[in-house]
Structures are given as structure tokens and as C-alpha cells.
Amino acid sequence: MRKEQHHKGWNEIKTNDSWAIFKIMGEFVMGFEKMGTIGPCVSIFGSARTKEGERYYELAVSIAKSIAEAGYGVITGGGPGIMEAGNKGAHLADGTSVGLNIDLPFEQHDNPYIDADKSLDFDYFFVRKVMFVKYSQGFVVMPGGFGTLDELFEAITLIQTNKIEKFPIILVGSEFWTGLIDWIKNTMLGVKNISPNDLDLIKIADTEDEVVDIIDAFYKGRNLSPNF
Image 1 (cartoon, helix red, strand yellow):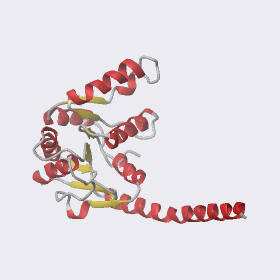
Image 2 (cartoon, rainbow, N blue to C red; image 1 turned 60 degrees about the vertical axis):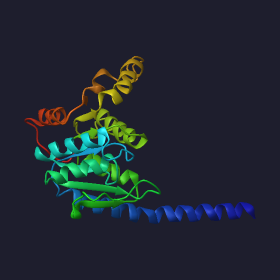
Image 3 (cartoon, rainbow, N blue to C red; image 1 turned 90 degrees about the vertical axis):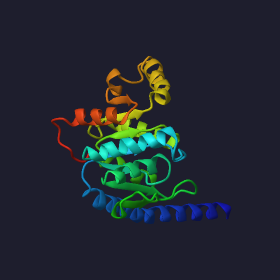
Image 4 (cartoon, rainbow, N blue to C red; image 1 turned 180 degrees about the vertical axis):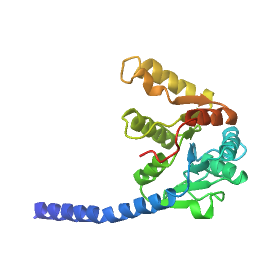
């Protein structure tokens, strides 16, 4: 009897998984339709816990403003902290300000600097991540936590495996990132778990001018288009 009940429960789970496909498809369709008309953008990542007035919040505002003034839109995760700072900078420059929001039990809420017609809501992290990677011409990575590292290493992996076109990945804040990069070079590269050229597109910057210069230099003579 218990064996039959066990199998019954498993069958119900599989049925629910099948129906979830339609919700997942719906999120992809919504994302592709809205993001496909926005134009060249740069994504800004970083901690949701960074407060207004703190050094990296204000630096993210300046970077996003400079990116928008250079003709790119700005994409963030749509929430507070560095995400809010990124959208705020784009808004101050009258640039395109996109927010890819995710439903979370804490931290996440829409910030007020996203363009009204460019605020997208997602239930699935993996769908949201596809939108970041597909429609970004560069990643600007501010100091953050696990989510920030997740986005960073996802992009590096996709470029390394030729699943997406190359684009610049800029780590902002040398004091925050140098230890990680040194470990990657000395430990991972030291035992040949990665190749030397895997890190060629990762740059470290400390100012908004450095960030924009890196992006502009990379795209000089290149076409701007979705990454896959």
C-alpha cells in the first residue's frame, strides 16, 4: 500500500512539472518580446544590500550615468542597492533604464528609477539570467554577494565554452576584486584548470571613465547585437 502511495505522489509531481513548462515558456516569450526592442545595453550587478550614500552605491550611479550618456541602455536586476543605483544613474541621464525583477521572499522590490514600460517580472532565475546574457553588450560587476558571483561566473563559463559571443566583463573596485582574481590566476590557472586566455575579457576598473573606455574600446569596429 505504501509503495502504491509513493508512486502516486511521484506521478503527481511529474504532472505538475509538465504544466510548469507553459509558465516557463510564457516568461521567455514576454522577455524576448520586450527586450528585443530595447537596443544595446550594459548590465550592472552588485549587492542589494548596498545603501544610498555608500561609496559603491554612488559610484554605480556615476557609472550608469556615464554608460547612458555614451549611448547604451542600463539593465539591472530591478531591486534595491546597486540595482537601484544603476537604474538611478540611467534615469538621471535620460537613458534607457531596464529592471529585470525576480520574486524573492526578502530583499527584492522594484526601485523607482526603472522606465515604466521596461520593468519585467520573473519567477524563474534561469529565465531572468538568459535575458541578462542575451541582451547585454557588457557586464559591469560591482561588489556583491553570491548572486553577483553567480552572474559573473555564468557569463565567463558561457564565453569560455563559446555558447555566447564575447563581451567585456568589468569588475569595479580593485580592493574588492583583486583577491579573487589573484586566487583564480595563482590557484585555478596554476593547476591548469583554466587556460590563460579565459581571463582576457575580465578587466578591473575603479572609475566611471575607465568602465566606459573599456566598453567603447571593445566595440570599436564591432556590430552591436544580441549575444545568441
